[in-house]
Length: 170
Image 1 (cartoon, rainbow, N blue to C red):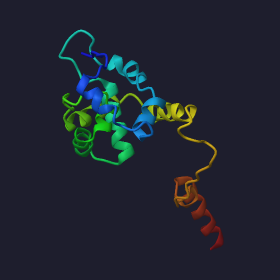
Image 2 (image 1 turned 30 degrees about the horizontal axis):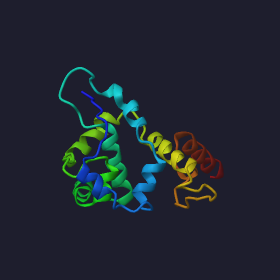
Image 3 (image 1 turned 180 degrees about the vertical axis):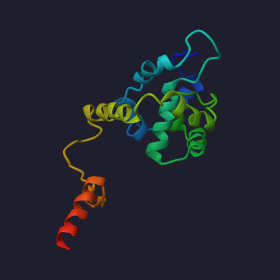
């Protein structure tokens, strides 16, 4: 069952979170990105009437976002979010709120995100960053990875043509 609770920080949490500098990366990301579209996008994959309340998809997507930008494993992102005040604030949790178990991330990706292309979600997030001036789009990046071209692959038609050429030469 999906239940979205309004975020309200307790007084001790709010006092501690006020010490995070305004130019901190996560504060700038919070101002630029609206993650609320995640709850609407994934609402149909949760039962509305039965079961215990699920962890909010927005929270789990924020955790996956932290995991990606800091290049961490599932276990590391949960561990470091519990130790870092700015990361806990970015997740919208009070200092005393528990973080989800890392295994929940492993279940969230295939069970809830399987029908959605993660690239589409990331595209929405990046577009928000560009629109808010967090990312500049004035450069071009070219991938120069060497790959084997299709011309070297032997398909049946090409094999037959090669054999025919050899026969005519002989």
